[in-house]
Each structure stands twice: as structure tokens, then as C-alpha cells.
Image (cartoon, rainbow, N blue to C red; front, side):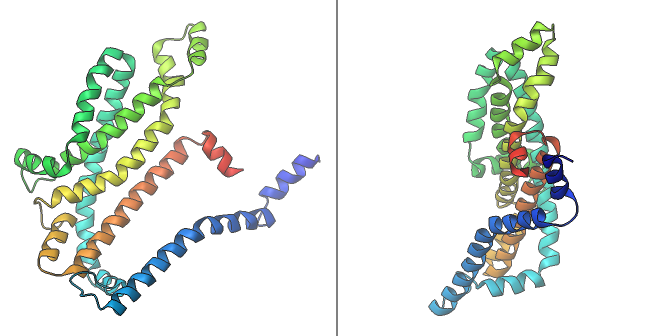
Length: 280
């Protein structure tokens, strides 16, 4: 057995030093973030206690944790409803963004005509879109929130996908065309693989923005079992720990949504150079 083969066998067979080293590297990678998180909670708790800050202004993390456990069933139910709105708008915005990006990448004149409208739509603030959407679809209809999320997600998906479809190596296209490849084959073999990293970058941004957009849209009215309405109602009644519990659920949903996109990216793009370097 040659030396490289011996090394490969040693690196992959069962638990051993290479696997232990990888575990230590992973711990070192996440330890700073965990330390900052725990340290921030400790500082928060001590500052509120020592400065005697009123609960209506800033509750202690321990109080928020206790309230979160006590109200988990209600806030989790509200989180599920909000996540449905975020997911529906995310899917619609991503579909429209990718579809128009494919058309815009094919025809430059269409691209030049669409981009100003896409920029204008992205420039509109959520607080302006939400009341209008409520009037169009109904204040209690989840579609009104999905429409706001669709607008938020559409722009980054379209812009990034257009970049990925158009910023390709001309030599690769010329090589395929020298083999008499059709435009569809060029798109499938070169443009789409090149656009996937751009697309997933936009989807990761859209995943977190979709949850934020859905919650903010709910501030202007909606079903009672949603996070935005739950937060505004409890905050107006001075039940600040309950409002913070809903904020925690919203954060967890956003992080879970982001993690799902990262996993999908890893499964669909194992060939990408960033993953190959990370696995070495």
C-alpha cells in the first residue's frame, strides 16, 4: 500500500486522531460565538439587577426564560402561523425572482427594463406596503402578509440570479457552442451551475428577511395567533416578558429557516470549491 493510500485509510476508518482533531477544530470555531452569547446574557442580567431597571423597560433574561417556558405553547402556535406566511411569501418571491432572472438573462433589453422596477419595489418600506396589502387581500388573510414577504424576497433573488447567469466565462460558452450546443444546453450546463452560489446567497438573505417581513406586516393587523399581533398586544398591555418570548420564537424560526437553506445548499452544491476546501 502506498503512502497516500495508508494516509487515506487512517483518515477515514473509525474514530481516530484525525476525527478528534476535526472535532477540536469545530469546537474552536464555535466557542467564541458561544462565549459572546453567554457573556452577553450574564452582563444583561447583572446590569438589570444592579441598575434596578424596571421590567416594563427591560426584563431580566431569567424572567424572559421563565416566561418563555410558561407561554411556550401559545407563542409556538403563533410562530407556526407566522412561519407559514413567511414560507409562502418566500416561495412566491423566490419563484418570481428566478423566473424573471432567466428571462432577463436571455434578453438584455428586458433586463434593462425590469431592473428599475425591481429596485423601486425593493425601495418601498415594509411599513408602507403592509397597510396597502391589508386593504387588497383583507387584514386577517395570510395572503396579505405573504404579498409583503414576496416583494421583500423577490429583489435579492432576481438581482443575484441575474448576476450568476450572466457573469460566466465566455470561453466556456464558446467551447459548448463549438460542439453545436443549443442555448438551452448552455443555460443548463454553464449558466445555471454558475448561478447557484449567487442564488443560494440570495435565498439565505431572503430566509431571514421573510420572517422579519411577516412579523412587521402583522404589526398592522392580522389573526390573533401570529407573532406580530402577539407582540404588539402584550407590549401595549405592559407584558414585556411575554413580548420578548415571542421575539425569541421569531429568532429561532429565522435561524432554523436559514439553516435549512444552508443544508439545501450543501446537498445541491457539493461540488462547489468552498465546500471542498472546508472538507479538507
